[in-house]
Length: 171
Ligand code: FE
Ligand code: FE
Image (tube, rainbow, N blue to C red; front, top):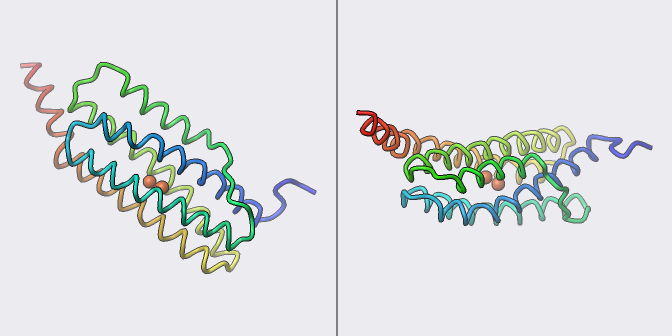
């Protein structure tokens, strides 16, 4: 028999990927909050850390409902995205520009999660697993809201500041 024979198997496989991804994110967010200059961005990262911890618990609830052990599977995609963000923090970047870069890195993370949760939520729905579907949609909506908040921060605060600084220097 194939390792992944059914949509149920794929659902579990993708949930394990997300479980590992979320854990990687909880390890990266404190450093991102510290690296951010704007207090609004620092608190946005800290708030999302608390939210992420709750999302991990929600995934554990999903594993319990499905009757499988809560276990992660190395998520190389998230590791790559976080590595890019970490590389940016190591470089000599103007603080306001770094804020803009941190927002971009965080939005890439959110988009990965939105894709991942979107897929598993759909699979759960197709499999008639209503309770699992509802839990996954809750997280999906949180990730979408986080992404929107990051966009607002970028538009209203960070990128404008970074842009004006650059312009000042050019002049
Ligand atoms: Fe998450
Ligand atoms: Fe997230």
